[in-house]
Amino acid sequence: MGAKVAIVMGSQSDWKTMTCAAEVLDELGVETDVRIVSAHRTPDRMYDFAKGAADAGFQVIIAGAGGAAHLPGMIAALTHIPVLGVPVQSKALSGEDSLLSIVQMPAGVPVGTLAIGEAGATNAGLFAAAMLANNDEELANRLKAWRQARSDAVAQRPQD
Ligand SMILES: Nc1c(C(=O)O)ncn1[C@@H]1O[C@H](COP(=O)(O)O)[C@@H](O)[C@H]1O
Image (cartoon, rainbow, N blue to C red; front, side, top):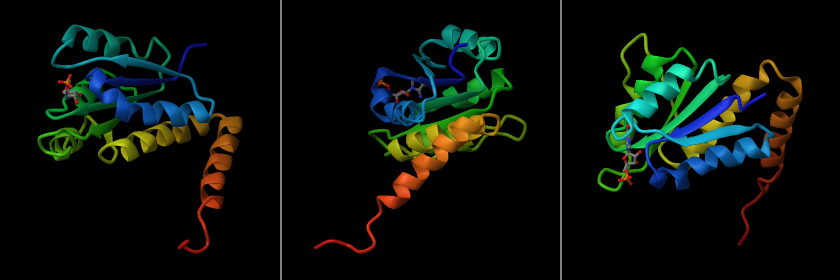
């Protein structure tokens, strides 16, 4: 069976951020399908991807974009598969433009919007894993262990 999580991004330049989503899903043993898809630059590719997402077996789509970040919302408009949006940090406006482009969707077309940048991408990966874990006990156990390991790694006291 193919990947249940698709990670798409508007440009190659987003990969440094979006790799964080791919990495955490890889650590959790969740296969991903990673693609460059742009509402602006490759609208036909975006349409075909979004329209085919359900038949391709995707259960969650993580979409990252920066600046005028229409990609997550446009994909959400074309499919019922849940879309998690990652605002990529832009040079001109530090990602506030990306965040506002993604988060303020009209009622009826939801995009679950994460934080700006790498933390948002990591959390998108964890969120996608948590959604899949509802129907996958082994993944739920791996996710619990991952979270526990992170918790255990936090020192009790600050070091000098
Ligand atoms: N926001 C979008 C979309 C889209 O929303 O369809 N397509 C590309 N982009 C964004 O343009 C930024 C700059 O791209 P370049 O670095 O290629 O110039 C990237 O962050 C990308 O996500």
